[in-house]
Length: 156
Image (cartoon, rainbow, N blue to C red):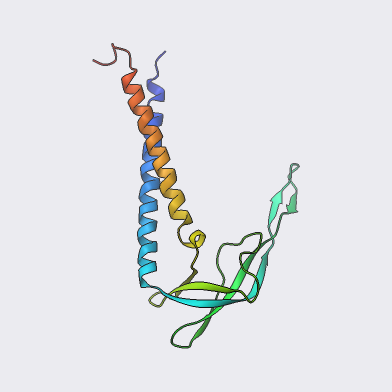
């Protein structure tokens, strides 16, 4: 049986791994640049927003899924200006309670605030890099294995 038509698959996986690694590296570089330019301030959770989620059940009807929550955080800059920030990510259970303190990173150049937590800053970078490494390593092993186990007639 000729396996030549399947030999392209590990190369495609390797390319996807390289793309994932590159994307992770670019995102990490952008996040480090953001991190370097920020000032850290303390915010207070002033409200909790309930995010109503829907999903399709087994027969195709839309039904309400489990609600998630995101905090509205108010913080004051060293200049005295008061701002609020609502993160893009919601969770269940709620990540912060009303009145709780939350560390905020604020970039005065872009006006971008972020909650200073691993998940909001580094999770996507980590996923891209780990996925890229796994794809690249597994495809490399597959490619090397296929070269080692070729028929002697194919090696020429």
